[in-house]
Length: 364
Image (cartoon, rainbow, N blue to C red; front, top):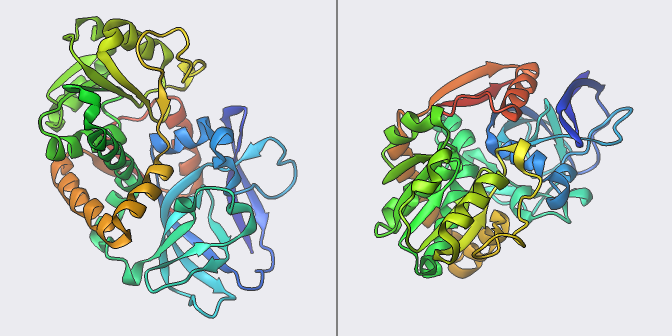
């Protein structure tokens, strides 16, 4: 028996190879997951872009020969247990969680409950615990068999948007009157805008996007105003915060120079514009506040500590259902078959060639 992985050169993200590997013996206490499906979004590209800085390359080490300098891009999706050396996890049950761009994954379940478990494999423990949790679908209150694709496409991205809004609202939006959101067509940006519309209606939501995406962004109905990046100089001056999903240093610089001290907080999230990320986060020469990176897992841990797991889950779930209703019909879900299709989709995403009105799911 064999399995496959898509291995990416960490210093050249456009170098992605499909590698076939022989199965190994399953370790004691471990469970083997057959990966069924996952989404490919700009979020996955962010994992690759900032991989070494935040340990994203460390979750799923590549196997086989000549793996030096290579990594596997993490995905969010569904999997089925096909072999188990755990007394608590049965063959045949399905889970949702953090998965490699591959056809299978071995995990070591710990802290097992009816609703899920944590992968206790040694190499994953230094990273954020948020990424090591797997939901057991049979008892998962978020699971809807009819909306599995939406969960894979939107779920992690939406939660990041939710956490940004929660953070900003707790800080009284730094006394700003509007939020400037770059890469406004991205699903994380849409999540932030939708939650802000519901929970912070007094804050004006201004979306920045490329010329080709203006119509799509306007049609979502979740932004008060939409501008192209070339129109930054036309933005009305006033106290504001920015949330930069693009990671484009030139765009960020234009925002800082246009608003100056009226920019009360500069938040960096992700990096969808890879070609212009070289000075991401270097705020030494920029007027206004120093850009600050938003690391969603830390804020998620803080949310759960402040409200408790049950209440925090209810807060997220309520906003999630509102978000699904708001974006219903805006994204056309496209199913692509096989790991080679995943590799090709990843490369297209790296190259910025994927239509934001599409949500892509890989069915293995």
